[in-house]
Image (tube, rainbow, N blue to C red; front, side, top):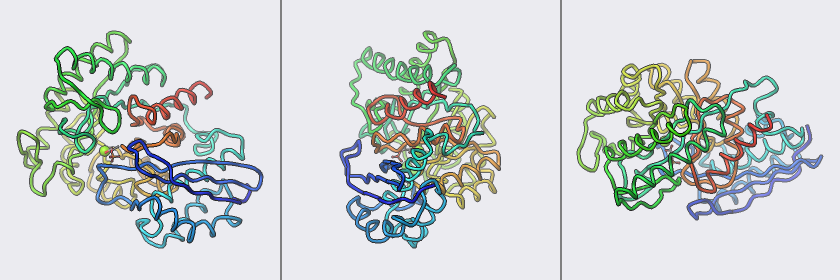
Length: 398
Ligand SMILES: C=C(OP(=O)(O)O)C(=O)O
Ligand SMILES: [Mg+2]
């Protein structure tokens, strides 16, 4: 291990055109790592705090960088991340900003890998990581907070669970995305794209189910392997404190459970993220009991990559998987702790991008390193394909 000699921070553009934090870490022996923070739109209430990029950078330059440069070893990720927590001094990164913390944490990990001459997934996962690859969940139709006047459900996802390789899965998702465009055109439905590159037509959820099912079926026929469907309901954004408010109806929490359980069985859903409000552990537990073992019920806003919230969920039997977004918790060490706790308790850990992204590919390596069953990182669009193409490269070199 060699000492970190320099941490450089700057503002760069994210995919929404907003400023975000980029970090560069250099080491005594010439190791180098660069990483950038993503940013959510449908953020969970209990996420670590993102500060304006300029403010986060100023805070970190004053409080974190002097504690790292010349004092912390690259490759010693736990110490890097402990130092970020120490410099921050709060329990939600509101002191320096979770965005600057995650950028430095990921850049330090990349510098550590560079020093070893190893790919990042190998550095993070170790020599004895499993040899599985994550199935990419491709967001093909979406709305919610990611697009105006579109579906109530935030994400309709293609899940190519039968794909023989990551490469086949990535191309299958792109084909489903294209098939959706063809079906929309046939029906004269205009559609722009939402924040993650999914089509965002002004249609009901019901119409979206019909179109996505048809698109999946046509691509299944072409590729000859199974593609299932998944959802991110992002239900906290629909919940008004008493009811789930959809464009054309409202549902009580019990009706919402009934509705989602019905969708799971009607559409053989492989994956359902945030079907209920982020505080409804009991509802999550009930729904998890109702759906088949073949469906992952995943907590995103529910758990926010936080071990305390995950422990409460495990206790309640809420969900059977956790979404892992490093910027929700602020460091890679914290993200790994959440993954480990999930694993120990039979929960799957699914790695995810944010709606606001950069070309950073850390999550592709994180998903491979931790043997994640799924990775959520879009289907098309430059900041999305950056991760998908990295998965293809990892697979080719593994
Ligand atoms: C990726 C998501 O969106 P955001 O980044 O806006 O939270 C999500 O909700 O899973
Ligand atoms: Mg989500």
